[in-house]
Image 1 (tube, rainbow, N blue to C red):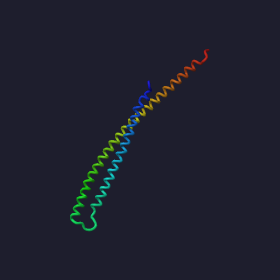
Image 2 (cartoon, one colour):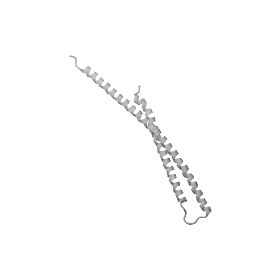
Image 3 (cartoon, rainbow, N blue to C red):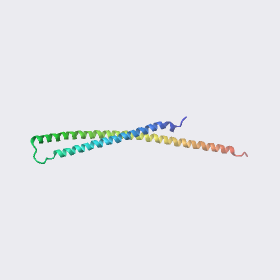
Image 4 (cartoon, one colour):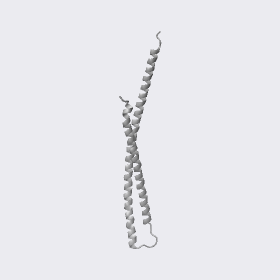
Length: 142
């Protein structure tokens, strides 16, 4: 019969893989969030640029077009703020998934370590008993 630690090792390997997969997904989500935040900063920059009064006189049509463009940028900013919130929620979920996967991996590793330590101590006791028994049979009879 195989040792308990050896029987648990495949589960520990699988838990380690899940933890590694979760950390990769977490990193990808962090990148998506950062990208969305950069896009928001760009939109706000465009808005500031186009909302500021222009140099020189603009025709009424040009002013109206500029105002409509600023309104479209404002709607895009609102949508991007919502997208960032969605990305943050997703990041929080992935962070929780990684924590769970990492905790399971650590728990299995601890159990395996404990089993291996118990097996090592059992083996040492068995070896010591064998030595003691051999020493007992070697003693000359009096």
